[in-house]
Length: 182
Image 1 (cartoon, rainbow, N blue to C red):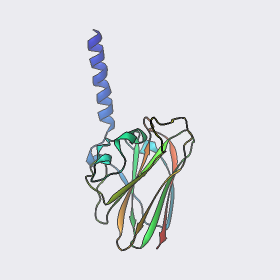
Image 2: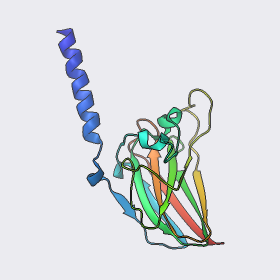
Image 3: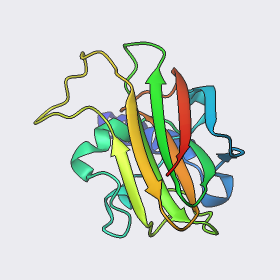
Image 4: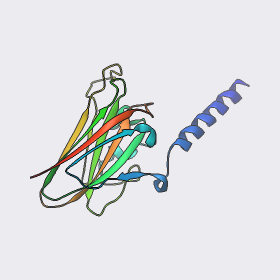
């Protein structure tokens, strides 16, 4: 009887986890119109939990498996065109000091509309999360996280991921995207 209960619990846990993940066709990316400054408010409730193996692939190299903890919550994805000859700075600021929200951004070709977890290569990827050795200090106050890119001759698609740390599926944040000319 105990074995049956354990097996049933494991089955239900796996079913809930798998049903929370989305297929490639269901992944929603919020496309943003280019403006020199974009400021918006969001909530991780808009997002979804995704598998993270794509992030540690050498073809993407976004963040290592040792930091998956920082990205195991819901992900909200945004896409914006970065013009040639520009710089971009992306900053996510949690509305509460108790919500650990992190950031990553993939630089993709101007005609590449791939999105995680169904992404197999990127020109580059940067991520921002609290730096620590060993175990994360989950009691440390949450801080803004930022990423910067520059473009010299080519335009790019920038795919931005706002992600909660493990277990964080609902939290308010502010996302700021600032473009400047080079």
